[in-house]
Image (cartoon, rainbow, N blue to C red):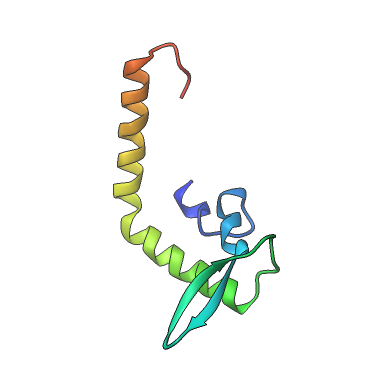
Length: 81
């Protein structure tokens, strides 16, 4: 799942095609778009940055998700994950 979070072609990474890079003085910032856009150069830049960030922290994030699911299941053993 983590590797799909930055892929705009996947449902988990759809958000990448819904942001735009906007100049804010000497910096760039993300601006949310109202609808999905075509994944061009800006989208690919966001995708690459998100991929690098996720790769650097994927183990920690997966561990926290697992812990959250374990707590939820411990609270209600009849609940499906």
